[in-house]
Image (cartoon, rainbow, N blue to C red; front, top):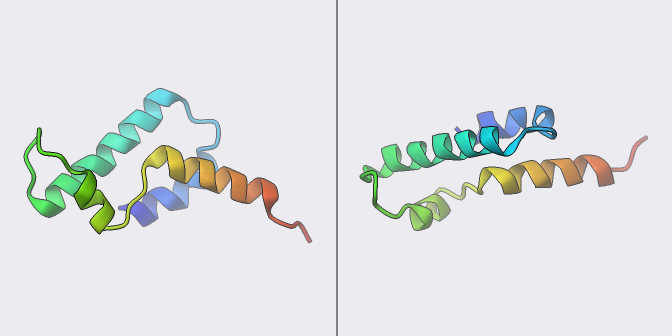
Length: 72
């Protein structure tokens, strides 16, 4: 799921907080599904095991990479 979300990061530079929250919930649901966690179980350590970063961090990183990349 993370590669699909990363692929769409180029389009999500002007995304609002509500949509970022929905994407983060989708990613959290995927982690819960992978590890069989219940709704109120903590999943942060499991998200680190699969090396997925939070959505807001991915969007910021992609935006900064675009700004500071050398243009030919």
